[in-house]
Length: 59
Figure (cartoon, rainbow, N blue to C red):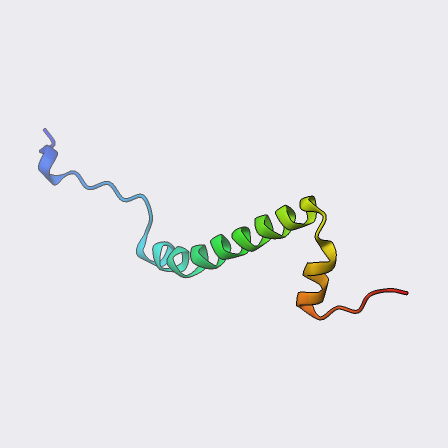
């Protein structure tokens, strides 16, 4: 019979957990920036975002 105290459940191995710890914050930051960009564009302030990035306006 198996003792419940001896059972170990592993969801991720240590290498995967370490990789996710490095990658997930970057992915979350990218998602936040993209959501902000979509929100600004929906409001119609596209010129503001282009000027912040330093892009030139087309004649």
